[in-house]
Amino acid sequence: MLELFQRVALATDVPEDGLKRGDVGTLTDFAPHPTGGERGCIVEFFNAIGESIAVIVVPESSVEPLRADEIWSVRELVTVV
Image (cartoon, rainbow, N blue to C red; front, side, top):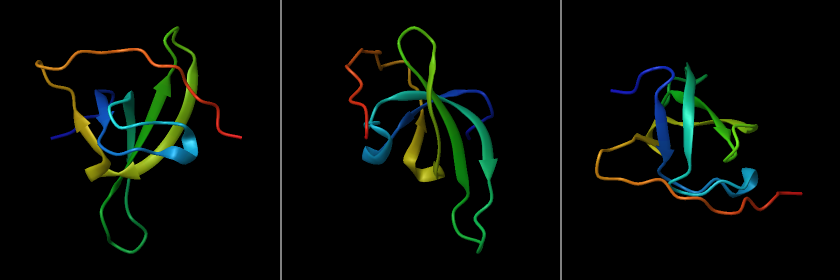
């Protein structure tokens, strides 16, 4: 079960925001679907030095909790124009 303010990883790419599967963000809120579909997750992403770079809403199935058998890595962020 996902909880507010936990770190989560994207399960899918979000190319319109320059984000990729595996990028880690903080779950800041839940958003009900306007027509009763899958609820959304509002997730904030930060760069390696802690600056906020994106706040997005994705379906709950597009994020997953972090696991003990995973390791973080760093990649260059490609700015979407």
